[in-house]
Image (tube, rainbow, N blue to C red; front, side, top):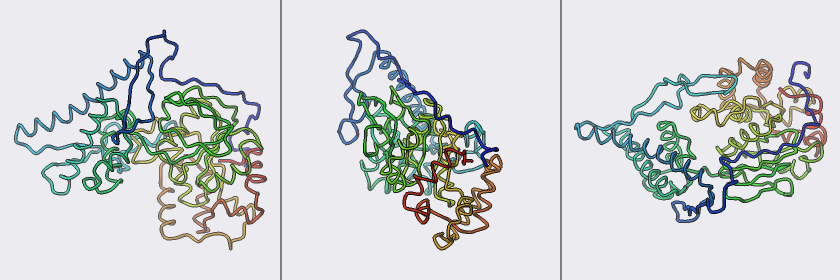
Length: 415
């Protein structure tokens, strides 16, 4: 396998010390200003209070762009009303594969001239969504004006009866971000973080908090503002993305981050949240070290891996900030189940949903560019069996950290 795969890891790779701060902190005394920032709930948000003057200027300039973009939308609504026409909002159809193109260097990205859908104020099916979009735009406008931040959860709980569900809020925010062509963070909306990071990594958060994952016996929560972290320092030779929290914790207990070689481990605890994906991308941009995925050998695990590597259809408009096409599939490979002679009694039969998910993945444009992946998916389809990573414990309790991963990394057993 190794002969047709990327080169093996260079364990002698240098230490990385990267300062990716948004602006220089070396400014004369007195050139700093204080910003008190609050969320919708009135609590202080996790954003910096001390900015160099150049950052203040950049903030004000970009804030005015955000405000102008929102004002343009409202102006169009008012013009329609003045002409006695029903106002209409036009948003990109984010769920339509016809609006997506695949590029090796980026992944799935939205095409410039994509199909759109209209959210009409005079249509019973869309009138409520029209009103909710204007409501959220109003909230964003006030937050940008006052330099306040809120999570999607904050917005939902500001009026649960009005919004109905968290998914409604999430969808509206993504539509607004896509419509305005402005990243969610710049709209002053923070994502709730569920991911963890551990291993040979330290950095400074935007508010000056120093985080050292290396010294921690437990994992550290992925920061809520990944773009703002700086002074990133690491001796890691690779990054390992782990699908499930249980596997992540087991590897942490086995001290995997230090036993084989210094590394960084990350888990999105299933389908990754935005901040976890942003952190993976930042580590790639900053450290330029190999990134591997450890997923269940099932369609759901493959889907999650594809989100990290190539992105998702719904967030394709932000692909350039989220995807890492160089990610490698380390395991659990369907062919590993055969190679390791895993007993079929510990494997799980496919459900109809599994079959449909796998068939969908096999049709995606990036699979054609990955012949080795294609073979693995064919093995999975033919067996109609899936396996969780924990299946390796049938060989021995610590087989994953003691044998499987070390051999994979030493001998280039990735795709």
